[in-house]
Each structure stands twice: as structure tokens, then as C-alpha cells.
Image 1 (tube, rainbow, N blue to C red):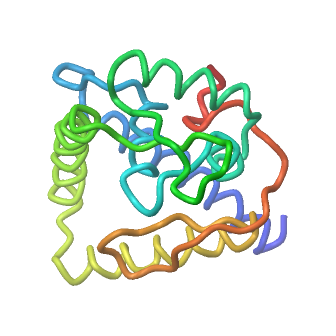
Image 2 (tube, one colour; image 1 turned 180 degrees about the vertical axis):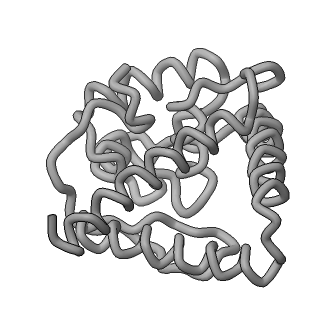
Length: 177
């Protein structure tokens, strides 16, 4: 095994563990009201201009039918609303409702508390945490450049905007629902 292969194996394992630890840090879904896909979609809808279904499918690299199902469920739950295209286009655009933003913020606070517990358990200083955040942003932006997509980062140091869409996946949560 080469040094690069060992490093990639270590990276894959550590990213898998990070994902598991972060999800587990929030504890049981007690108090959380959003499904994971709604949470992820609302984090996109709260930033930037309201997108169309096609734009959401492009952003999340999924089939439009998948996004349509997810957004339809969110419409029925009152988390998002359909609005006309301000430029007069035929496609409808979507934005979060006050209820959607309220529930997102409530669930986000649970996620932040979990992240806080992880940072405290690591014993990291604020400086070390900031270094990790900077590296994580750089890593995610590199992935976004590779995929031809950028994620809007409201309030964070990062690029914004969107680009060309790679091949579709099953759903924005990555859970294959």
C-alpha cells in the first residue's frame, strides 16, 4: 500500500466517523420536527433567490421527480410556498414559509448543540475550532468546484452561486429515500 492509498483510506474512515458522530451528537430526534431531506432543502431555500424545481434538482444532483416529491411533501406541511417567477417565466419558484424557517431554526439549534458537545469533547480551543472550520470550508468548496456547484454560505467565508449539474443521485439527503 502506498502512502497516498493509506492516507485516502484514513480520510475515508475519518469522514465516515465524522458523519456518524455528528448525526449521533444530536441524539434521538426528540424535539426535531423536520425530516433530513426537508432540513437540507430548507437550508438551501433560505439563501439566495427562490429556485425552481429544475434548479433544485440541479443543485442537489437528483432527478426532478425526486425533488418534486420532496417539495410537494413540504408544501403539504406548510414548510414552503410556491410563488410566481418574478421575471415572468412559466416555472414556479419556491421559498420557505415562516413556519418552515421556524422549524428549521429549532432543528438547527439541536444540531448546533450537538456540534458544541463534539467540540467540547474534543477539548479544542476556539482557535483550533476555527482552523478546522476553515479547512472544512476549503474542502467542501473543492468538492463543489469538482461537481460544478457552489453552496451559498450566508454569513460564512465562502463562494456563492451555482454552475453545471453532474449526474443525478437519489435524493438531497443522501439517504436514498
